[in-house]
Image (tube, rainbow, N blue to C red; front, side, top):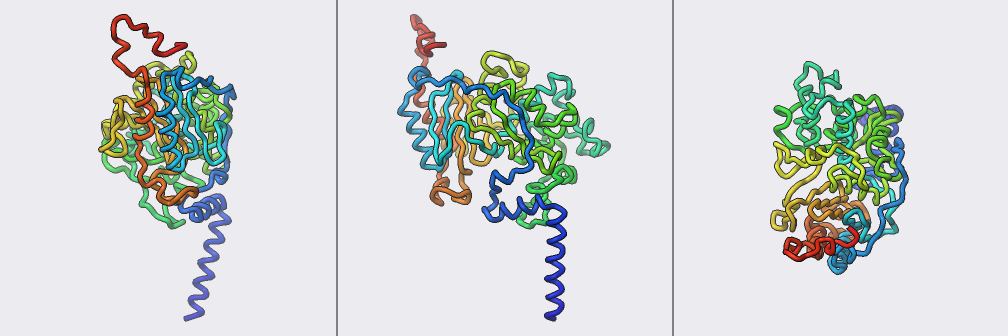
Length: 408
């Protein structure tokens, strides 16, 4: 019996050794994530592909008062962010940086993993691909570019379905096993093959699911339709145009599929440039970067979930039904612990980076209870409460509107 057990152990070790030799990147990523309670260190988002940027100076800085913001409200928001183990809180209004707080030794230029904010880049770049006639139309079926799904029900999935997280593709069952499909998608070296094996649950467009597959597949579609590496097309279509610094996109293997969802490595301050494009309907510093109709299209509620547009949450809904946003037009892009709130009516953007809300301290740093009472509406509501020109006074006769927002 002992001999049988011994040969069984040898067999297991041999299989594991063969697996490690065949897919070393997978095992490095997988073992690192297990050691850090499911979080993979950013240093292991390798290999990466460069997204060349314009490397222009950041937006000019102004005092909160010059942009009609109450400094006390901003400090209250910073206090809330600090008690929830944040890394950065940056506020912009009318294209000016008006408030910044950093923790854990970070600053405006610190590189961070998008943790899902990269989806917003995919959505914006899709508009450019449509304008460049590289993609046909938003409701184009993916079978035109995925011959793997031609004459298959999955080929009816559209670009619009992918934008609205409504592909209908069924994610693999959660599993900690390295042999699972979930592990292969998260850490593997052939992620596209895993996605293409997924089954379809009903007709595309009917069910909303928060999953990386839809954004990653859309990036692959852009790559195929433009016949350009996704990282280079992002640079040409958006990143360089808005003057952002060089960024990087994580690949599943050298020359392989881009992870467009998590794994977009960029300076945290550059997300304010992306926010300006959304706030201004596709413009950056007065120049039209995207077709004027594209951003409004992205903000249209999905048929499968009324409080979501294209990778962004829209409207007054918040993490808790008891604490809605103070204004109706909040746009929230989020991923992991990162939050990018955009309020077009007030031309305000707010970025919070840091630990994942509700992760119970597993990401390291801070107390284990730091995020258990996180409220997605708290920071933007505090800042909105300090907007001094948010008043019907602007419509009263005799009021000089230009005095309400100095220098604009």
